[in-house]
Amino acid sequence: RSKRRGRGQITVYSTEIAEQMKRATQLEQALRNAIIANEVEVHFQPIVDLQNDTVVGFEALARWIDRDLGFVSPAVFVPLAEERGFIDALSETLLRKAAEAALSWPQELFLSFNLSSAQLMDPSTAFNILAIINRTGLDLRRLELEITETAMMTDPETAHKIVTELRSAGVRIALDDFGTGQSSLSRLRDFAFDKVKIDRAFVSRITSDSASEHIVKAIIAMCRGLELEVVAEGIEDFAEALRLKALGCGLGQGYFYGRPVDAEATLDYIARKYVDEGNREKATA
Ligand code: C2E
Ligand code: MG
Ligand code: MG
Ligand code: MG
Image (cartoon, rainbow, N blue to C red; front, side, top):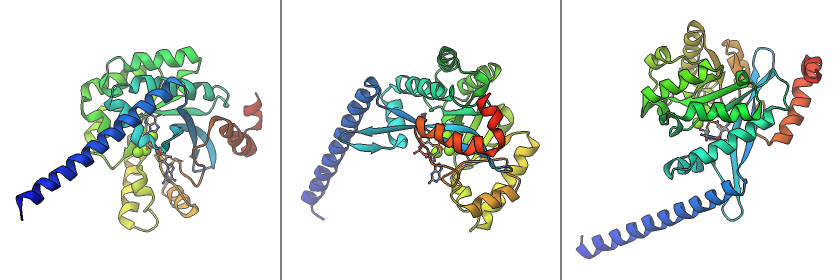
């Protein structure tokens, strides 16, 4: 192994790293511009009551299509915005758009919104969210915020304060992606959550892998005892829906019930599913 080859490899790697950094900076600039130009959108995915097949709310999911870069996943641009320190600007726009859309839904339907880890370390988050929601006029009791265990880990004390403040204002809190992160059962005891969302990783294997089924069954039983609502994420087919229903899972979400769609298509969805399913008087009231 020659030294020259070693040096050559180092050059290759540093060129790759430089390329990656360049791409990240381009992405960051494009995202900053998109936020200023108000081009980051919110889509909505239905959450349904599995026992009677009615829609009960929608989760807001950020969507950004860049002219040059094309579709960029929120799993990429949300962490980038956090890292580069402009998650507050992004999140504020998204929450405002989501709340404004929710104003034209039937009042029984809730809006679920994802909080990022940086927001859970910032003591002013609760105040900021309440201010944005109050400005839109959306009833705070229709708002639900999703947080992940991993996001709470960095500063559990601040996260706890934020959760407590929001809950005392009437906002509900859901624990997202349950079962994949550093799942800690003591956190379920020490934090007052309203809901647990079982991660898609378990749901997508529920009909093919009995271990996954047992885990889902145990989470449902535990949540019943703790009086927490349960949502199964990522339901993609009828067999999964049936199995979850049989296990007594209260709520579900996934492509089988509906993909995330824009605000206008969400209203169409509500007109088709919600109104047709015996809620006609409520929807038009
Ligand atoms: P999440 O909060 O766990 O959202 C669920 C993700 O699963 C969404 O991906 C959704 O489109 C996808 N999904 C729903 N049903 C199915 C299904 O049946 N099959 C499959 N394969 N996928 C399904 P998406 O929209 O790409 O978002 C990814 C993540 O990005 C979210 O995970 C959330 O952590 C984050 N995110 C999205 N929007 C926002 C936002 O406005 N703010 C923050 N802070 N994070 C966001
Ligand atoms: Mg979520
Ligand atoms: Mg999730
Ligand atoms: Mg996730």
